Length: 187
Image (cartoon, rainbow, N blue to C red):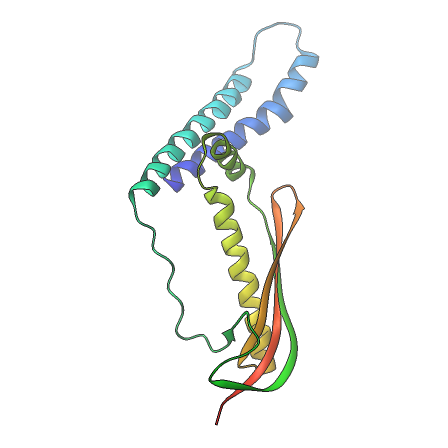
C-alpha cells in the first residue's frame, strides 16, 4: 500500500506543480479563448487522481492496521553503550564522568506525505507519516549520541533526555543528550 500511496502522492505533487506554477495563472493571463489546453486538463486530472489514490490507499492501510496486532520492536543485544534516563545503577558504580554527549537531526516529510496526513486529520487515526518521521529522527539522533559516547570510551550514557522543536512547516529538530560515564561492577 505504501508504494501505491507514493505513486498517488507523486501524481498529486506533479498535478499541483503543473496546475499552479505552469498552468492556471499563466493561462488565465494570456489566453484569448476559453478553451482549456490539454496539458492543463492533464495536470488537474493528475491532481485529483493523486488525491483519490492516496485516499484509497489510506483506507486500505487503516483497515489493515486495525486488523493486525502490532508488535513492539526488539531491543538490540549487541549495544555496547548502555542508555539510561536515571543517574544510578543498582549493580554498577560510576567511576568517571566523561562529559555531555548529544546527537541531533532535522527531519521533514515531503508534500505527498503531508497530503496523506491532512487526510488522516479529517478522517481520524494515527498520523503514521509523522510517526515514522519522528521515529527515524529519534533513531538517527540516538545513534549519533551513542557514537560520540563510544569515541569517548563511555560504558553508559545516563540522564538521557529528548527534545523536539518545530523548525519550519512539517520539519522537526530532535535533540538527544545525556552524560557519558565509565562504569564498574560494585563490590
